[in-house]
Image 1: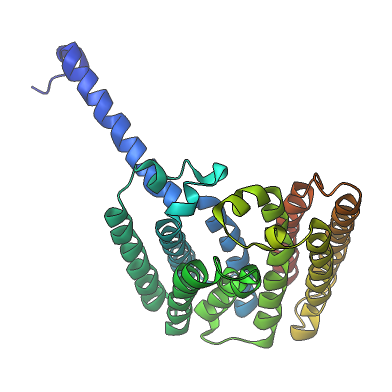
Image 2 (image 1 turned 135 degrees about the vertical axis):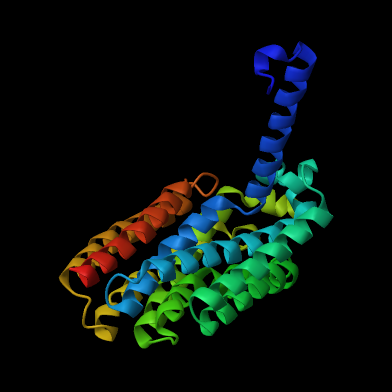
Length: 313
């Protein structure tokens, strides 16, 4: 007869509860290493790439393999980033609670975890989609996890620009997973996401510029006046909106719905970028950059919706 919780003594029940708590905390620590919020945003740009390639809704097996494989790739890159950046994460206030800083996960275990995620990503994409998608995912992991994190981030103010390629790669991975190649429309959409990342991340870096300065990371808001950062953000926002309006020229399935969303969302994005610049001129110590940051997130959620609706309808 299997004993119930009532049959167990108080010490045994307490031990079982403690074991469950430790397990939940350990799983949570590993999840935190993968930076789930970044994964969500990357997957938002994967789906329109797939729909663009299929000219409609792709098959569910391809969708599942692509999204799970892509999530594993993004997670692997994030874990590699956490491993190498654990020293500066310990210095920056917003990252001091990360698992490797708290020693909730050992460095050795994190390396094994990153390796497993990398193998899973490449295997899932190669088996369930196309070899090109798998190669692109592997290249993105290497670019972000090693080139950006270990070489660019601590050495140049242009790290956000040069590190933007893996951030926009999910568009190409999603397209290649369905079509087995990359079209001009995929390149245009990739360029939209690439340009968008600059005002998006510079606004966030402006918010935490003191953290970056303390850690010795030469992000643009650390090495340049905030007014210059805001001006660069405005210019790259214009580039984002301009490139987004070129997409219908590369694919005749994209029309009124997408252009309406791209135009209206783009105007909102530009308005917030200009307001960020004006605040940076008037009050460089408090330009409220997160207003632009949150607008950029909303923009990148709305744009794929317009694209997918246009193609499906």
